[in-house]
Amino acid sequence: MFTGSKKELLDRIKRKGTLSIDEAVEHTELAKTTLREHFLQLERDGYIERDYVRSGPGRPRLQYQLTPSGHGLYPSAEARMIKEMLSFLKSRGEEDTIEEFFRIFWEERLDEARYRMDQSTEDSMQSKLAVLLHMLEEEGFMPEFDFNEEDKTLTVKECNCPFSEVVKETQLPCKLEAMFYKKLFDERAERKTHIASGDHACTYAIPLDE
Image 1 (cartoon, one colour):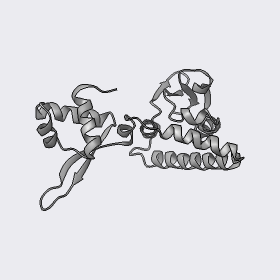
Image 2 (image 1 turned 135 degrees about the vertical axis):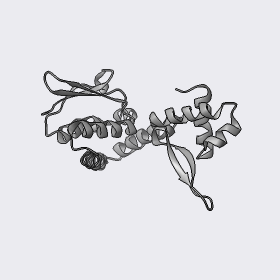
Image 3 (image 1 turned 45 degrees about the horizontal axis):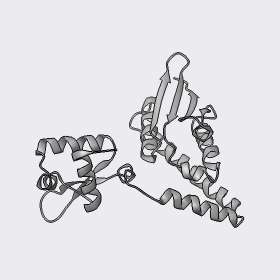
Image 4 (image 1 turned 120 degrees about the horizontal axis):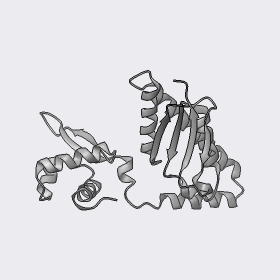
């Protein structure tokens, strides 16, 4: 996804754990102003975050570390392993265990979404939706929100399925994701397109009372 100096910075943070702008200056040929712009852009995109480290007297030192989205840029066999685990459990007749796990997982996810939206800085639907958008970005859905002023309908578009390997073994994530939006928006959400059915994205139409 990234090439050049931004990839070099991400790789160095991945290997070292944290990285300061001064350390980046020492290991690259880029000016501090250029590096600062790179760090700010990667931070705005959600791939890195600030971490203040204290190593003695004085002010804590500003470091940057990868976010979950940043770690997600690197190859992982986790999804494949989960797919194989589900296949193993199904072969042992543990379908009920699988269903209970996903049900609890989505209930906790729904509680987290409600909590974050309730804690939004402004008591408005726009602010709550911004919080939800950020949560979906963290989870890797690559979300897009579009609000139609005429019919007061929000369209939520999930351009990526972070559970694609899991869905190859069970459709429970798809079923529970649809229920997630219905419960979050008082049963008003309706799924219009579905990645697992061959569409390029999962979309949900949600009438809102503004």
